[in-house]
Image (tube, rainbow, N blue to C red; front, side):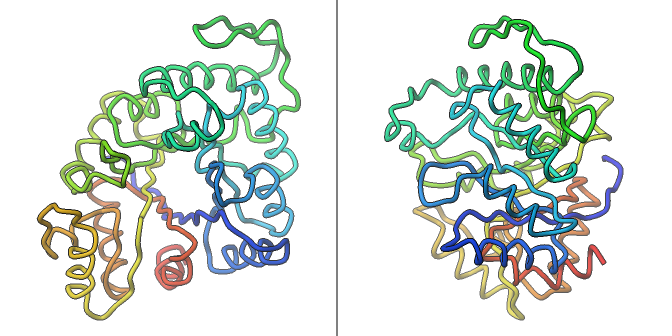
Length: 314
């Protein structure tokens, strides 16, 4: 087991109807004790991540900002490195750089971007990581790979955090998690998606599946495993005096033809159900067993989880 880190909590936010609403959300996250405000990177109903992250940093004092995660195929890595370093500089070193290989086929098709196989997209992201790290370092970078070529380019600006901002890579499959183990600072865990893209695969949402993912990371990380921060994206938070009833409701609504019991739902690590005491106990147990100390929720759960954040962070 990895060394026990202090708990941190992040909130993933993507929508806002106005500048004032966005600033208020960032300040609320900070006041409730969340460590990081995170923004995804999709082409649909969300704000553009770079500008919104910078405004969140400007509106707060200690709140960290992060991409959750930049789709590598939407930007050339030379430009992403420049944007990320600028964000880190202008936020006084508060950036967490999340990067992924992209997964949502529909938005690729809508934008006319070729949707290559998962293997190609992951390989391209792996090259991009080398370029981004190289441009964060001192001195000019030359790189020649299968997908990218860079010729004696000096990255500017340099990030405040050295040698680079914390890098987050998350996923559910062995190859992506192995790359995260070797290259990232923060490794995020999610279940793999169903083959039809309709949502998470319930068979990959168990404690046993999570343990398997962590074992892949441990094996690939080797001696650096204890230096990794482990993150999990929690899909739903329900604070209730009757967790069994909540679990039964979820079992009925999320089963999608698969037989799922309330007891099985209560064991899903991507859900938090129960009283504040019960949720705290679950998170403490999962940190003890799996080493997961960084928990991310969606904006809709930010206030519900706030008492837990106050207790475990405070």
